[in-house]
Amino acid sequence: MKEDIILVDTHAHLDMINAGKGTAEVLERAGEQGVRAVISVGIDLESSRKAVDYSNHYPGVYAAVGIHPNDAAGFEESDLSRLKMLAGKNNVVAWGEIGLDYFRKHTPVNIQKKAFESQLEAAASLQLPVIIHDRDAHEDCISILESFLGSSSLKGVFHCFSGDRNLARKVMDLGFFVSFTGVVTFPKARDLMEVVEFVPMDLMMIETDSPFLSPAPFRGKVNEPARVRIVAEKIAEIKGLPLEEVAEWTTKNAVGLFGLQLL
Image 1 (tube, rainbow, N blue to C red):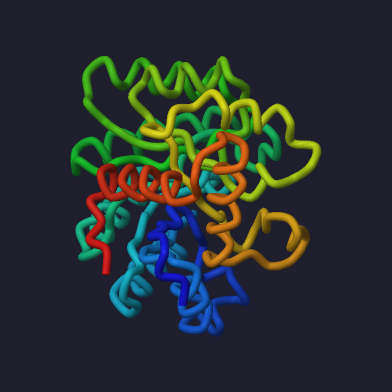
Image 2 (image 1 turned 30 degrees about the vertical axis):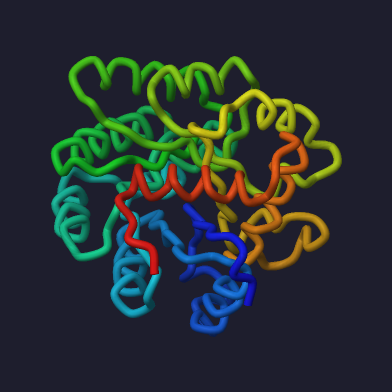
């Protein structure tokens, strides 16, 4: 077991890794790499329920509940009451992932925006931080959050950050964190590496987005929380810092935002 560092995978979909089979073994491998907490994130009502179940069954697992923009086509206000009930359960530390996705556009933009704004209001009412999904929708995401934050002190993180330095600055100006995945290990991700150089450690988090976006040299294979260590190692390389410092900062940030109790 690698006891030298303590890591948090702030964004994984445990129910999607091997269809939810072998979760105990997945978490054991994560622990061997220094991962002391994993946030399992919902994308709809069913996966949100599973995230809550996992958080109550597996030590070190926390949950986030929410409806992803690509799963919001049938969004109704009644969904909020169900999510609020889930959000009140033990070990639920965030509302997400929510936001806008103009890349796939599985859901009409107007419905995406309605679901996003309604869930921001719900999260604020429960004083939960939010996990933001923003794909090719930078301007609208920032605009909605800027408008909302005019009357709220809501905090959160832009997960799987995919913008440039200018967007990173806008995210940080909102008081939000910037989170990086295994994409930073891809040889052609030079622009993202420049963002890593730009973002200060006190506003940075790391994640796997398992089972997606497995880092090199596992690209194309099923991802899992253990590989968040590879993300941390790459960030340490890019920023010219010891791995221990990257681990310390990103873990401190995750604990602070989500109120985690590490094992």
